Length: 138
Image (cartoon, rainbow, N blue to C red; front, side, top):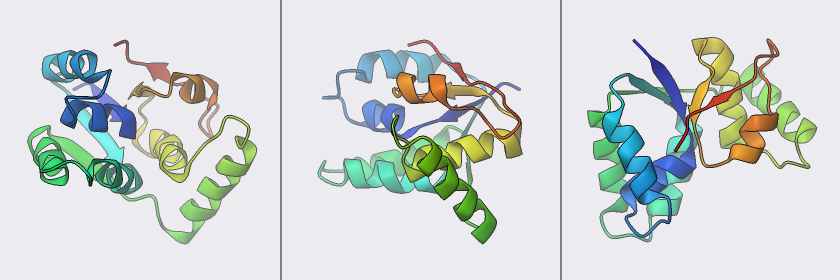
C-alpha cells in the first residue's frame, strides 16, 4: 500500500473550500487510495487554523477518521529535542514544530512522499537518514 505523509496546508485546504488550493488538494486526495500519515502536531495546527470556520474542526476529524489516516505522536522527550534541533537548523527556511515532527515521522515510518503546500521547506528538509522528500504534485 502506498503511504503519504500529509502536512497542515493540504488538510486545511481540503476542509476550507475558500482556500485557494482547495480544488487541487481535493482532486489529489479523492484519487488517493493509500494511507495518509500525519502527526498529532499537524492535527493540532490544522484544528487551530480551522477553529474560526463553522464546523471546521469536526470536518477535519471526519476526514482523518475516513481517510484512513494514521496519526503518530512524535512527542517523547528525545523526539521533542530532535524536533527543536531541526527547527534551529532550519530557522531560515523556517521550520515549525509540526514540520519537524513530519521529518522525524518520515524516518520512523519509512515514508518520503509528502502532500504539502510548503514546497520550499520540504524541498530543503532531509531526514536523519539524509533522505529527500518526494513532493506529491498538485
